[in-house]
Length: 188
Image (tube, rainbow, N blue to C red; front, side):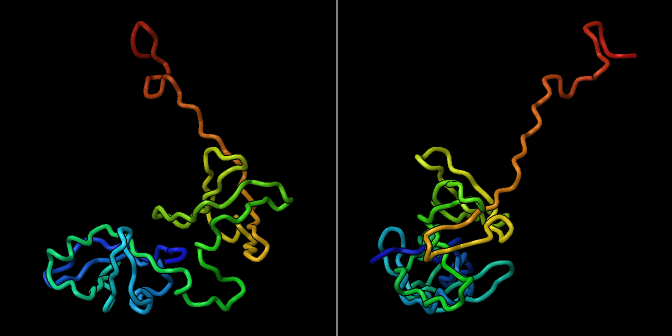
């Protein structure tokens, strides 16, 4: 395979007939079934025979998986596809997140912030992860049009308008104590 793109993750078994819960990382969950065989992180090939909404998520049937035990054996497997198998993007303002990895990140005034190492979603929305020039601790910024107003894949960069920095309030050493208390006891 060429460059592999993560397109989904298998969750728990669903029922007794081999179905699994699946978290698609595609705009349209049905795309998982149209991409053809998917590859797991350990190199196995799996084909999604069908996918349907179920509650807040999706349930998939995988070719050759017919019982709960076989479905449970697939739990927590990531599903990848070769980048070349993804459909071409036609709209100018659309892109695959994988195409952002490696792009330079610069501020509106052209100051280098580093390079994009990932687009993450920890449940509260997408974040762009930027590694500073020369390495070091990465920085996470909301991946919104307000914070990342320009994505220029052809130019090899994203433009970032970072929010103003704020500092957490230092923890009060006496937090939780009665402010009027003295060594002799509580305030009257």
